[in-house]
Image (tube, rainbow, N blue to C red; front, side, top):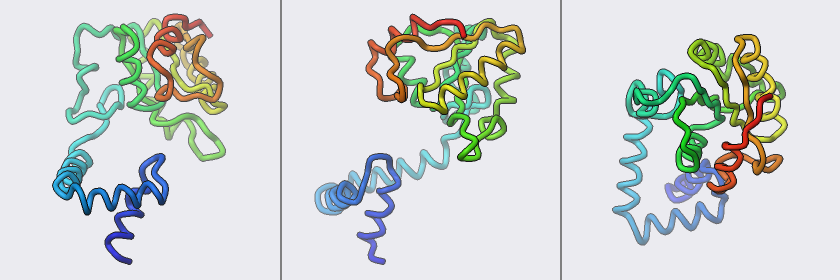
Length: 193
């Protein structure tokens, strides 16, 4: 296989990048921006080598503990559970939330073999000890709703109030695709499960 074809195939691992986009990106990097492509390769290699999960919340970070978890002004009394690290960025931009987070890195999906063990929910249970409110910010897909119900049950077992994002999050939607004002409204209007 030629290097050009290999690069096109490699670019297709990115979400939303099909054969045509991969071809366009490949030729752009090789013809018009070789130094940009070299920089991209170096940064990507460094990021893959040095970025890992936060020991507390499981978001992506270069440190053992991320900036949010290391911030003493964040309250452990409120814990917001999200599906991806991108969801944290979106919530931080759209809300004034001062609690802490836990990243699932997915959602429960028995068909795909994703259960509580794969999401490391035992680590979440450890964080619930300091918690008064568990804010469930999973998507409104079938899997997201299933995950929300499971998390609500975990909170109930620990005597913790469980709330869920409210109005504005479309059915079947993921947090990263929702505009800031809609997300802020949904976050402010969360209800108890």
